[in-house]
Amino acid sequence: MLRQQLLDTGRGRIVSLLQRGPLTVDDIASRLELSASGIRAQITAMERDGVVQRVGSRPGTTRPSRIFELTPEVEQLLSRAYIPLLTQLVEVFATGLPPRQVDKLLRQVGKKLAGQLSAARPSGTLRSRVVAASALLNDQLGAVTHVVQNGGYVIRGEGCPLSALTGKHPAVCRAMESLVKEIVGASVHECCERAQRPRCCFEIKPGAST
Image 1: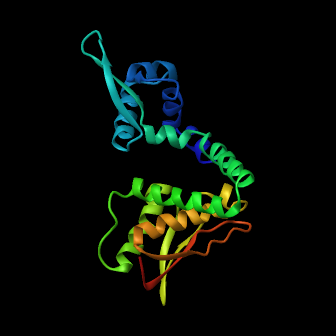
Image 2: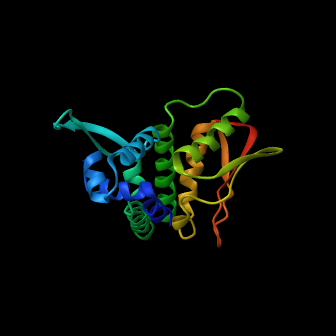
Image 3: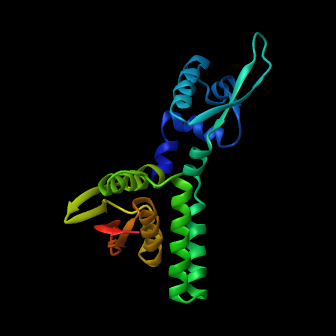
């Protein structure tokens, strides 16, 4: 489990403390019974890597002590609430609405998500836009995809970042199809594998622009 692997590392002990609230280097060193210099080196690296951020300072005996907290991105990574909540939301939609309406709603979600993740549609050739869409899926949504050319283009995944949902609710794949369509500006057809180990797959054909 990624969350547990993160918390079980040396940095993870610091992360675990900071989940409870902002702390100074001395606070962390005292609670972990380690040297302040060693913790300071860890915090410097964690700040560089975007794991922690400075949020102020506290008066000290010789100089102010900087206060650190986890960045919002790491807080989100560590949260266990997103998938269960999303699963229940989709379940409520799926049981309370006709399939066609669920499909329409999730396509709208994908379109809005594309607008949130990408300020403007990439320009350039269709291939460059497809590559940009694949990169966005990987960088912003945690997918692992690559582009295959076979007459048209296929964005093919090694897995699925929404695998907890897609097996039971194929309309979730259509949300991602809509997202990819917004990025590439062309007709997109999802060909995702949903049995056993789900994998993303989106086909884009040359000349089928919107």
